[in-house]
Image (cartoon, rainbow, N blue to C red):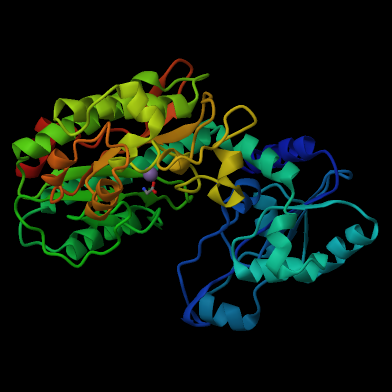
Length: 463
Ligand code: GLY
Ligand code: MN
């Protein structure tokens, strides 16, 4: 938790931006896994964390824009709770830690919201993504749970995004530390990646590192020798010599700030010539993004420049052909990179994705695309100093997609299907780092960069 003034300042800034009514920020509740007392690890809502700082279940925060008052709603523990959980600070004490003077039992939330509704005051809330909070919002506002998401306040969404997008120094410090855990995870994966070792074992070690230094992983670990499947959560294989192991994994600090890195490494510690050729192209794409990312540049233009680097590299290998710029504008390259260059990162690994990607990654100027591949770009708008984004190009040979495009002769003027056929057993490569946009460029987050050049990866794997 940061100093109480951090949260107070954020709430003041939010009230000013929203301008009227009542702002309601719901925290999360415990989520049962298989019976009520056996819950998933608790994860607080990120906007609640941002404005109210408390990682406890069963809280809600209200900001009254007109009176300027902030209220925390939550229940003090009972004697029964104390017997099982030990003594806990009171809600009043917790509220004061984050600069909130007024706190009430949770049931009083209904009175406050009902009164505001009866006075025809605007109730601003964010789109709920958990069903219990949809039901709570129905109870509080009278709007049916099934449609309550559609009634979320656009003014509040935009105000929250404008604040959370630019990371404060205290947040950058947390992200740097999360990336240091990410470094430990990925270097451990490099050391363990040997023929005969199971994917599950390495994934388990990585998850343990994340938990032992911080809170948990920032998303379900992707670790696979079938890296052509973009988000492959299957860990059932034994690693085979000659294959590539793709690891996309990150850590979440106790403060819930995240890291997100991907490395693709040769099982056994030595890249084959064919793997080197494709790896160098993906690394050149990654470097292209680093070269271009700076304040004032749209991330969409960086994504497109990276795609051109991919096409020109694939043309050198005889995989693609034709005019590079035309190939990218037609979307032909998306056969090999069907996802976007990156996303915002912060308290969420895909930061603020619950608030709507068209508001987080796009604006009036930069609109989302519907073209296959480009449609998956989560962050397109102009970069600003203080943004943290991922740079994660990839090149994949997805047999089912290749077969489909070949049968349909899709983008045949740019694709050498005969050559592509010979890569159907290749797998996929993705390389990902997290970058902070600085005054005149960008920097990696975290103290040390996870080995990424062919030489450094091989050396780390073999020593
Ligand atoms: N690292 C997982 C993702 O960005 O989707
Ligand atoms: Mn990512």
